[in-house]
Image 1 (cartoon, protein in one colour):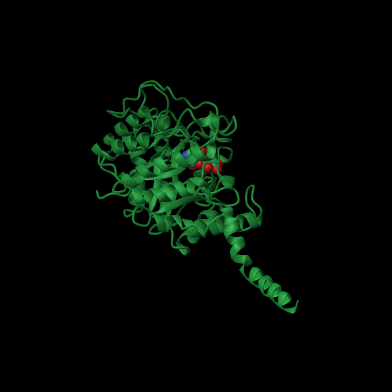
Image 2 (cartoon, rainbow, N blue to C red; image 1 turned 45 degrees about the vertical axis):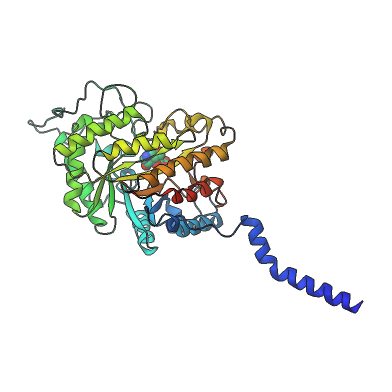
Length: 422
Ligand code: 9MR
């Protein structure tokens, strides 16, 4: 009997001692996952958009303080590049006119957090039709007699009458449909110059890459190259060239990106090629193409391969800037990323077999990134996990709301093995 008791006591101690290990294995299903940044270290940095609470701590939008702490741990473990999801947009960093009109706190915190954790930092975004306060476009003085408003058209800009007029949400929630007296071309260029010099100048040498102009291309099947916006209407199509020249003057060492969505589609890509070739012909300092890649679970290796192959002919590095893969039924029709359309593209529930579809799509997409690793110089996800994603209902990321890696995570890390000699 004593022997039996001794044996049972020993067994109990053994089981209790092994419990943490057994539990860890049971909970995670395997050993701790490898860090994405390590898996792809020979290919490209792996980054993410981050929100304010992740770099400042505390509770976040839709997240308790504990959940936010877990999000931060995932961010630090897996990613070696970071960009502010919102805090460098004009509306947030420069809400009021004038030198005292800036709010740098959250952007400063993001840059400090990124550099403090050994991450590369990107800046998003300097000039965009959305999330720009009305004061930027408002005329404060009557235009001088020689003001050019409206301006001359770009020679090869091929912009006919507008087909992409700002409509519902055209300039972003709460900042749209500015209908008051407009600034002159000169006045708006001056504001753009002040903004870019101040923001880029502040982070010079620390923010290495900037989205200088965001989403200037038209959508749809029309013939216009550019979207009609207050920028294009007041300054003219050359607002793009001016923005890049200002940014280059503010930090000659920064990598300057043109950033847009939907480049997986032929019509949008054609517009990109036209725009960038024209900027190149004019010696405008565009250094990289930012392809947002807000794609969906129907996206194939072939589609991504073709897009990257064509974009690469511009001779510039490609950065994947806002990657997510929408699993919602409403999002399977295209690659758009207008904020105003987001409700529709996340409706209808998830597609059937969503987890597997997501894993298959990510595998194909990453296989294409790895194949094009000589051109694709950066991959940035648009959020750390599904819970904080702008498309949360489409469950578009590699980690679930508990920061557990999904099967898409496993699918992605296996693609690194598809590297072949160039
Ligand atoms: O994810 C961003 C969301 O939190 C904001 O409400 C929205 C408007 O500022 O912008 C989202 O990010 C967009 C990015 O800045 C530009 N490309 C499309 C992204 C998704 O809308």
